[in-house]
Image (cartoon, rainbow, N blue to C red; front, side):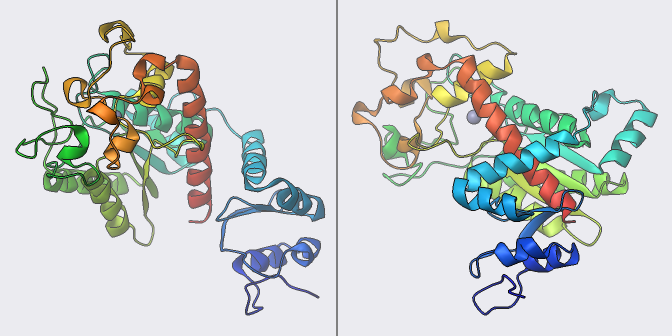
Length: 355
Ligand SMILES: [Zn+2]
């Protein structure tokens, strides 16, 4: 029998799992090269998703995947998962009675830890948007998959912006090289952000992880709505360091990359404002921004498009038209949130299933 596998013709992990499930027709139909390791097995339906989200099962499934592409496969997998979804009504740990906690943990031994700092996000958005975003995605995923969501940690780290036109450099944001700016605390802002030292946060979240481990959780999902590189690096390092036999810790962001040709997400710009509009509360106040004919300089409003953060500022250091938060909407926010929730659901299920 022809067995699918890597170029050296050894059966891949995916093929071996399918062999153990006795699905020989599926294996015979797989291409001979390029099969990455499997991430999730769904024995009830004899389906399998690989690292790209491709789906394998019987002959018909495989034809679908290769004719219609990876996005189609991802959707198929989610549909299968949704069919067996148990809708959980209560997912917030702080609201649970002891017996509800025990039941939730028995259904899925997963704890979600949403984080994001109190941080300036323009005059129109609540200071906690990053954490609200992480908490929203976490709670929707927990309703679908199971597990419990910890009280939101309105905590986060950021770093000193360096001189020059490098990504996240002062000169890319229209700020003088002499400015002393941490994160989004541009000179003249009415409110300072509550950034916490990265080392302190590391100690705190390590202890939270260990406390959750003592509570019996087998998987912990650290979710950030804040994109500062040092904040994310610290959480992802912790996830790796605290993973051990019996405990899987993963780090992920609430954000998923926008669909091309849409560029990267910036700060307090259209997409992030739309997300907060989609969450609905607390309220976004677009009326606190000037009339839409008035340009929004990065340094005056603390609103920055993604390209400027990448080192490609707009002429005049003003927010690009396509990233203007005055063009945000709840409809766009709900569309972004729905992709994020689907994506995180797939991630959590595959990692929990493979554990
Ligand atoms: Zn933000």
